[in-house]
Image (cartoon, rainbow, N blue to C red; front, side):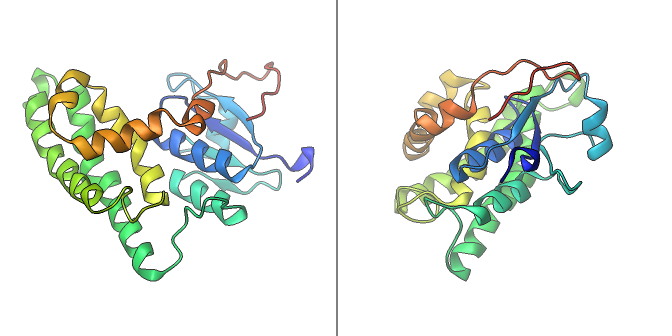
Length: 216
C-alpha cells in the first residue's frame, strides 16, 4: 500500500465502536491516516463520506467507504490476521456472530440506559443495570468454560465486545468490582493491560482541514 493509498479513519477515542475498529486495524498492521473528531462538531468531509455521522468511518482513496465498525474489523483482518481472530469454522462463526449481535443490540441499549438514566426516562440506573446483567452472566458462563469467549484464544467476538464491557464497568467501577463476575473481570483486565489497547488509546488532537497529517 503506497502513501496515496493509505485510507483515512475518522474516529473518536472513547467510542467503543471506534475502539474495536482501531484494535483490528492495529493488529492487522494496516496504516491509516487517523482523524480524531469531535462528536459535537463533525467534519464536513466525514459527513460527506458517511451522512449518518457516526464513527468509525474508513475512507479509501478510490472513494469506497466502510462505516460500520464490525465491517472495518472484518476487512482489516481479511487483509492480515496474525493472531487468527477470525473464526476458522462455521460453528465458531455462528457463535461469534451471536455474541456480537447480543452485545450490539440488547446489551448496548441497556448500557446506554445505565449510563444516561435520569428522572425523565422513568427508569433508574439500577433497573438498566439489572437488565444488562443477563448478558454479563452469559459472558461469565462462557468464560468459565474457557479463557476467552469462544475457546482458549482471542476471537473477533472478544475484541468486538470488550470495549462495551469496559464502558459498562466504568459507569460504577466500585459496584462492578464487587459484583462477583470474577472470570469477566479477569478477561477485562487482560485487555485493559494489553499493549495493543494502550496503543489504540493514544490521544490525538482533533482533526481540522489545517491539521498536520497523523498516521495510526
